[in-house]
Amino acid sequence: DSSGVYDEVEIEDMDETEDENGEIIFTYPCPCGDLFIITKEDLELGDDIAKCPSCSLLIRVIYDPDD
Image (cartoon, rainbow, N blue to C red; front, side, top):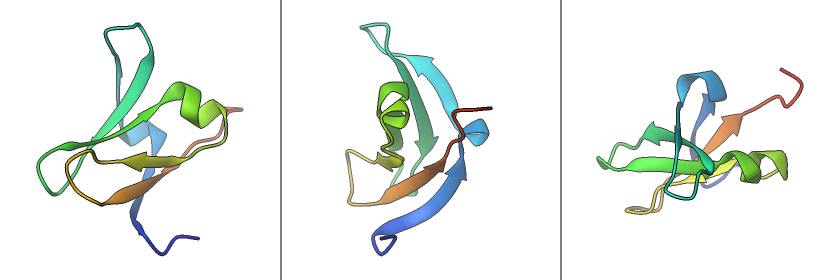
């Protein structure tokens, strides 16, 4: 269901970083000025929706674990 999804973004277009716990996270600029955030663990568990903590927008991350 993509009714609430604002956009689809390739994983290659996202910024990869580590949080304070050493977890890999991917971020992508949100139109509201904040960042969409998803963890590598989320992706590996099959969750491909990145959320922005400051607004209600969601994006779907195009992620192929075999790449």
